[in-house]
Length: 225
Image (cartoon, rainbow, N blue to C red):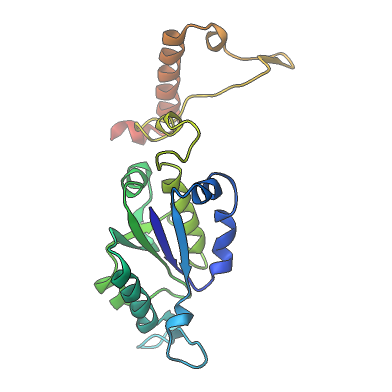
């Protein structure tokens, strides 16, 4: 998979890709992540990429021309499955969306900033709009990092144990069951005996029951789906 990220602040985004699972995925050539600054595509000698909105109002708007030139250049080099805009009014990111996007080969992610991007960018270039929640951030960079992490970890070969992702919360519309590790007894707090019984079928049944009970208690809306 190749992910091209268009952002005014590449340095803000680099850190999440330089550690842990995502870093190993990049080093293992499971994914390639490339940053693009719209300032490199502006004709302004002052590197201007934003301007005041037509009709007046507070804030600045990212201009269409630098974004157009950047996306057009990328599309001339390869085909893209999705051009995604991170925006608070997009489809809210969930596990099914992450699962679907992890199967893509090439993705462009556009990070908005200021008051957002010229609407014509959204009308003519964007194929999908994604939000990470009903709140507003200073820009789309942190949202893009969250989105990328959610899909990169699902790429085959990225996790040490590929079955690990299959047991994550939301994969089957259930929250994950409680998990424990050594020691089995700590300060009088005991691990459920079933988990140390060695009875694999009974352990799996316990986990299924616990997942259902946790979901029923904490996220009953998932069961309605």
